[in-house]
Image 1: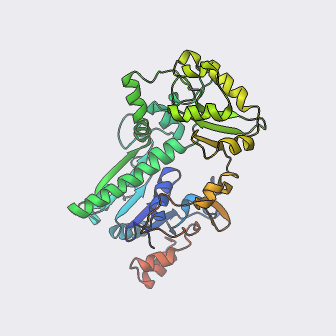
Image 2: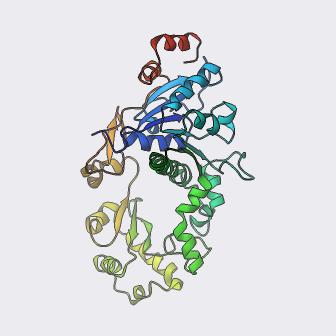
Image 3: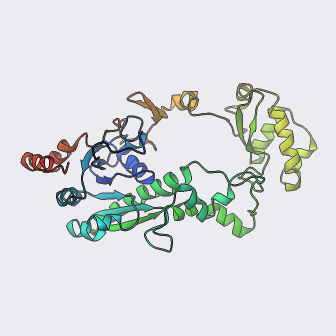
Length: 383
């Protein structure tokens, strides 16, 4: 199968973080995504040495064209590709694409149906639009970072799952697909302005609702889902490994007590927050009496809401992940498989990441450039 986005053409202006993640998602689903890489200068240092290698997982599934956009012929080449695309994705600071002559006005003039997808930390407008930042800063401004972590320590960096990938890349991919569907009805393209700060806040919609309802305190580790509840947390085992417990509903909590042999009446008062510290101490002492594998044999697959906390080496080998083929091997690199699943238009396993400019000639030929024009671009050191 070709995937549910087969036939959708995307031009990706290569960057780091959320934009390549969004492009990977679209490519995983069958879209033809062309990466416009920067044409490297001889001897130039690469601050991200993983990029352009088989380990650059987010670059999988698409071909690469290395193009010098500072040259008029480079910009002209990009515009010819954009004319034929359904979507353009870019993740530069506001104004960068405009200064290159590739801003929304120029591109939509050439291609009125184009979906111009943009992702930044702060958004295209506002007092912070031009400020530097990274994932942690955008999540901090959304209110979500303050809500994570233990009560007696500063909020921890939440990897870059929340800002870059959830609030940025996924929101950009979702917005792009929404706009493509609308463009096919209206015949008109538009700009999709994705701000990671706003995306992170949106991911926290439930917490904002609970806060307004009076069911979410401002104290970290003082709420149901932030590690405050003793029945929704992680615990260390005898061997130093960890397990996760999520026994919120009464039937799940009852099963947890039954299987672990806990009959103290104190456990019947689990919704009284004043008892949470003591109950957590009891669970911590309990789970420290056996190894993680022991607890897996007793609790995994039951109605407790239980799972071992696996590291990156263990997760691909877990029987459940293996049975569902949740991870794939691409050119010797184990990585998450495309998601979600489709019953009729399942996409194939993505191709390995390309090196910058690996497919320059082939891409241009496939998108209508003559061999003579390709040779001229190469002679002019544009590609």
